[in-house]
Amino acid sequence: MEFEFSQEHRIFRSSLKEFLEKEIAPIVDEKERRGGLTKEEALELYAKFKKIGIGYDPESISVYFEDPFYYGIASEEISRVWASLNVVIGMSFPVVFVNLASDQTRDALGKKLEKNQVIGCLAVTEPEAGSDTSNLKTTAVLDGDEYVLNGTKTWISNAPIADVALVAATVKDAGTQEMFLVDKINSPFETSELHKIGWRCAPTGEIYLKNCRVPKENALTNMIAKSLAGEARIPIHEGIAKLFGYMSPLNAIFCMMRAGMALMATGISQACLDASISYAKQRKQFGRPIGRFQLIQDMLFRMAAITESSRLLSYKALYLVTKGDPHARLMSSLAKGYACEGSVKVAYNAIQIHGGLGLSDEYPVERYFRDARMMTIPDGTTEIQKLIVGRELLGHGFSAYV
Ligand SMILES: Cc1cc2nc3c(=O)[nH]c(=O)nc-3n(C[C@H](O)[C@H](O)[C@H](O)COP(=O)(O)OP(=O)(O)OC[C@H]3O[C@@H](n4cnc5c(N)ncnc54)[C@H](O)[C@@H]3O)c2cc1C
Image 1 (tube, rainbow, N blue to C red):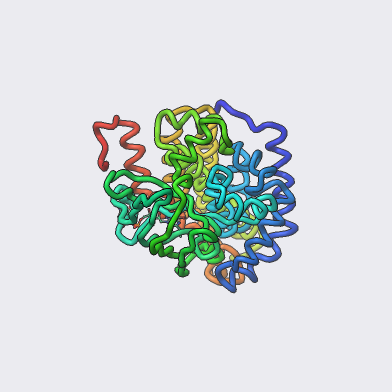
Image 2: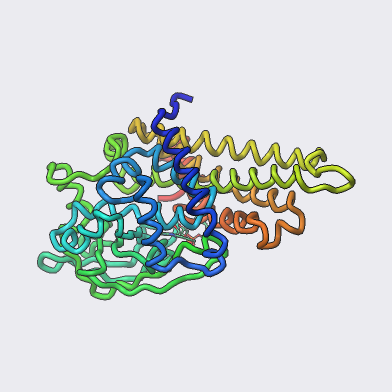
């Protein structure tokens, strides 16, 4: 391994752990029983997290989002306690573009942004375009100084509570793809909520864009041009900016997001391992703690091996991101594919070790299992991660998909 955590990273991890145990762990079960967080609940949590330097306000963002290691540590530790909450915070990242957008968008959201009170979402997936993101049906038509967006987005994390969405669309006539920062105040859109087996508190939904007018300054290309011209800056690490030279800006950001997802899975795996070790020491059968049975130790071995290797792959991917190394694409997909599939196996074993109680909602491992099962689909399915890794290993001439 070529990297070490700095002293600041270590301090951040330990104070975050303390904060999560004290402020967050006690409220998880009750909130999970009620389902998706309301916007008010999410904003209350955003306000709490701002106090420990996690958020998208100008002060927090320069640490939390600009240094991929802080982002990764937060993803791992928050998910160890409450995976849903990590989705609500992590998937808000399009908020980083607000300061580069049009005057209208900045006027509408600027004050809230100062207080970390803006929720974002990334809207790429459509009913007919999941893995195949090259086939988007949402259209953007330039009309004067505005683009007019029409289409439906589905499975969008934070959609029901978002103030701003980064929407991918096909630009009509040009046939090219573009992304647009759509703020709900100036460019209203409707949403509806979807229900799912895990990440129960993270609201997921559909977005309906009907003649939604967006200033042309809010096109991602124009916002990046603005940042290159030095008019405002995107709070991203210089390594990611370097990756723009090898891949699209979104794919460069995906390198960090996918490593973040891998660390989310690592956090869930760690929670499963911790719960299982504790239970194996305390639960007695045949007159001795079940931890003394070799078959239980075999399960713990496999769970620990997956958790540790997931962590190493994920931080290696983040390290490559900070170096602007194009291998970050391979490593982040490898980490995402491995750690997310791994967390399902780890959570399966955690339930097995807990016996009947593992299936009951009296113990958190059933939630870990449901949350782990979510990990293999969003942000690119495991199959798509395999195809990315295959293409990166073999060369682009071997691409199994476009
Ligand atoms: C909880 C949740 C949150 C999400 N959050 C967001 C979000 O915030 N923003 C967003 O834009 N999207 C989001 N998504 C959407 C997610 O990215 C898609 O669900 C995912 O990319 C898969 O698309 P799909 O569901 O349409 O499956 P499909 O693409 O229809 O895939 C179905 C199956 O076919 C396989 N498959 C597809 N193509 C290939 C291929 N070429 N080779 C081999 N196998 C293939 C897939 O791996 C999968 O097993 C979210 C999804 C979920 C479930």
